[in-house]
Image: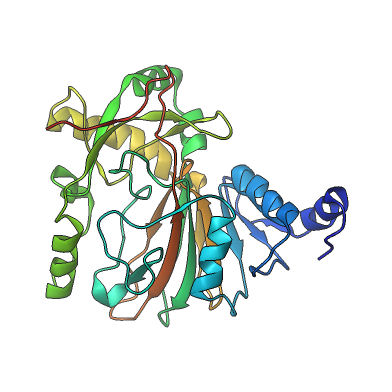
Length: 300
């Protein structure tokens, strides 16, 4: 890959951007995540991320925890998960299928926090013999495809997001083994709740996107029944198949996604197989509604 002027780099790099699905997702070929990457390469990756929402890098076999974090810091400040202790590196979250790490429900990362992450970078460490794909959905396209009447309604709605999964448990397949129960007790030991607009304005592009997912517990000023019905209607526009991309992981794969414009789902279809992934996330902005109102901490 050429690293000459910005213009030369852009012309060469564009040839290596291969869209994977119509709604979102692109593979960046011949890109090696490494120490000391030129700023123009980082800038180009960021532009492609804003355009395609999720990027895939194959054959990153030499990627270490240190380089993983260094790469993340080129896009912002790394943030540790607010409730789950990292296994080794405080800035890296390990998702281990044998330790409760099966996030098999639709979600945007850490929306119970006042400042959900800006983006996430996930690498495959150990993969099962079969299954274990991840699916992403485009929440900007989901908003765009809402009927106008639903757009007006969604723009007025606010949702309470929490890490304690109260009524949202009906939308989350909970594991019943003792390891999973211990993981969930740790996860919700510190209850965190925030109120976010259902329609947020993207901090970089100005696009409108739907901010929901499994941490959304109810809508403000709505009861559980009303919240469930409204959630099902709006969330269904996010997860329609035409709005998604499904990625079959291979050893050495890395995925990077815009957490302000996507939801994702790690499919739990690999039985007792071992699936270990490591994730770095970056500090995000406080979401802002279409009227300019910022998210707020939920007061019980």
